Length: 187
Image (cartoon, rainbow, N blue to C red):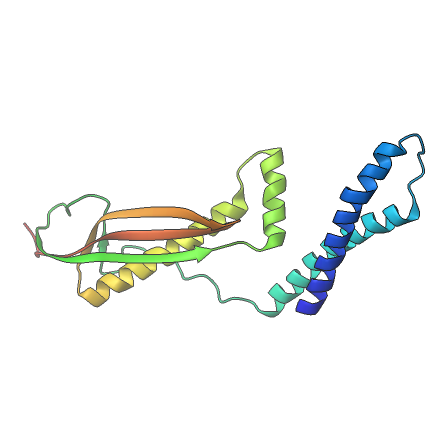
């Protein structure tokens, strides 16, 4: 499948460069002739066919290698770890600070969803493709932070914060962190 994608990429690049660096200057110098020459038509078709081949090969590859479903969201009722963005847990006393608990993930959406997101950016409205990506990333990062806190023997994670950065293109890293603590039974 990679070979087909490389052929599509080569056709796209060849068509793009021929159109931009030969076709546009030709049109500027011979703008009175409305007939598009055969070589420029081939370059434009090559550009469009290259995009189509790349998109189809990526779609077939994605369909063939389905990723496992994202980790399920953690509800506080299911987890013994208390999460709070506050510096204390109401009604409980912090008996020991265990250190930083953290979890991160890098998520990206495939090219087909990225193109539909681009259309949404132009037309306006919520970009649901990126919203879904960030919800999944936040869930995975939170689960990893909770797992690390459980390994530390924590009862709660206080001062929970989320940070996101763009890694490359449409890939984003989401980092969840907080202070893992032990709690007294009650105040």
